[in-house]
Amino acid sequence: MTVPGARVDRESLRRIGYSLNPIDHIGGLPVLDSGPSGIAEAEVWAEVSWLAEHCRYLDERTADLRAVLETDRVCQAPRREAVLAELCDIQTGPSHALLAPKDRIPHGEVPVVFPRHLRDGEVSDSGDERVSSELADRLGRYRLKAGDIVCVRAGAMGPPALVGRDRTGWLMSSNVIRLRCREDAPVLPGYLLAVLSRPEAIGWVRDRAAATAAPFITKAVLESQKVLLPPFDVQQEIVESLVLLRERSTAHRELAAAITRTRALLVEQLTGSRTSTIPPTA
Image 1 (tube, one colour):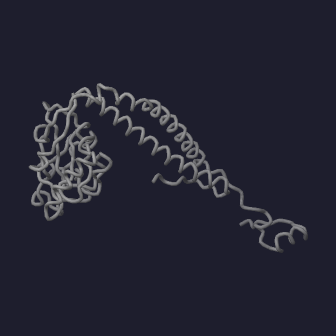
Image 2 (cartoon, rainbow, N blue to C red):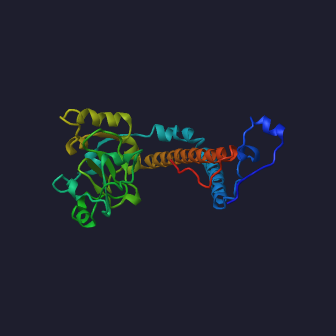
Image 3 (cartoon, rainbow, N blue to C red):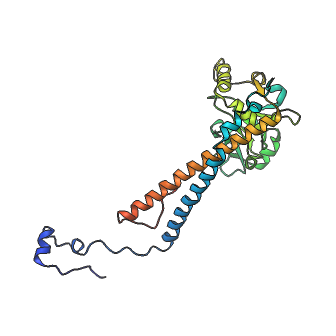
């Protein structure tokens, strides 16, 4: 083992308080080439660069969006009133007798969707609640398809969520209720989600759910909820604009997270405490 050492004169020794610790005289230990960390560092900076460019692209695409949507064709398009019973097949989740807590197993193949999985208009990953494929097949009528809208049935009433393609086949829990737009209905699932996510629509559901002993919305009550529908082509334009804005919002969040990781890496370098690891994404 090599012990670090250094030759110093008396004046130098005096300036540092006559310390006999070799590290005080030779400085910090040399920083070794971390190898893979250099690759990781390059990837972090490349990610920031790419996301910044992507954000600029989306910013440009949405710059005139408000003006486009405020045209007479969109804002003054006729709206007709309809109730959800006219537009959707509404299905409540399975009873507790059909899907009991004991049926949920850690290594099941099919995720089960609960109210807590309805986040930001999407069904989040419910890896914490799963059942076997056999049970899910027996409960086929309660499985989800892309384009379904899932709402809270029991508990704290919040915004609904749209089922994406990668969530097809997942199973409803007892505490949610599903809206499936009929093929002949003049409504797009994305537009209906936007309408039902408005504070007024959520308030309508909360007021009626609060009338029960515990917050609970019935199928019959939900069927009576009214919505205003513009022509199909106007719905399509509104949905495309909302999707674009969501993509822009997501890109900016990802850029902010990447900049935070890059800042942490830079602090390590500038303060002399560089390591070969990068903080995980929050």
